[in-house]
Image (cartoon, rainbow, N blue to C red; front, side, top):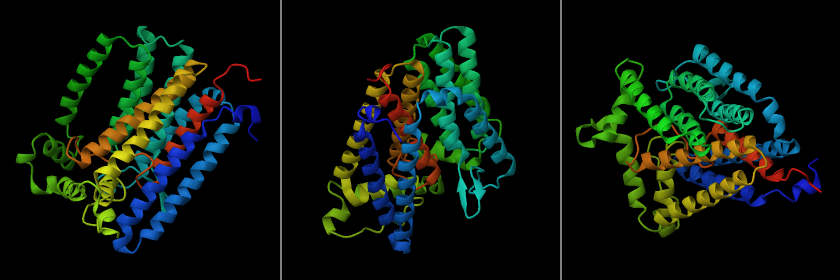
Length: 367
């Protein structure tokens, strides 16, 4: 059982906001899949993941988050081992080997590796007393960051690779890394990307998606197909949405992956500009509350956890919504708490549980 004195420090509003977003997402998943007569199935499945997520949060809150600092190394290397196992044994689906099959289901180890990276960087920065500018410390942090990124990139999963990069970048920036080091790192990454671009590691379909974003006029119709349909779906929702205006469900089935990566195209079509803004408002409250918890954390470990979670959420939201409206290149990044997917949803709830534990135990002595 959770200590009643600690329970008074728990920010229940964070859980409520996350649940509202998930239920809103589940309803939009229902709308997206209803034309295929699978709406109820996916709606109930997403609600089941929500229930499991709430249970996971409760289990995490029982323990002091300092326990996760003790086992961060074990958790990190387990995540790395899962990625290696996945890369060796998994068969490619749509050109990428990103899932480990378990019966009729599959887990995406890259999602859990993102969380493992946050915990490992938090542990290391706690040991380093937050000193990121010492060369030895910086190199240790970079090595721990780059290992899961390389393994995820080899799947290949550019989306999650970018998420992990911005998690590390956000942690380095917020916790005092000098600007000149950051600029040097960005230049080194750009040079590395140029080398990788011409190495054959990036698949042709991934290159076509990136070039379609950079220069839409020169892209093939196939490369622009998904984006064009997404923009058509969002634009047709106008201010209040076709669903609200007609009082009925709208057929969004023509947008590929509309219940996973492109769930925002359903939101825009069904609920219009108002629905999109309200969703962003909920995300803004969620993120601001996590930032506040991080600022009030009693130690560096807790603060870094919050920084990593905020970095992951901010980039995932910006990238996912941006790619549906043509502001960002298309990648396989889910919209947090909205898109269908057990691995993504469960990882986000684990992250939220850790943040809540940091906030609940922000006082060094609890009377």
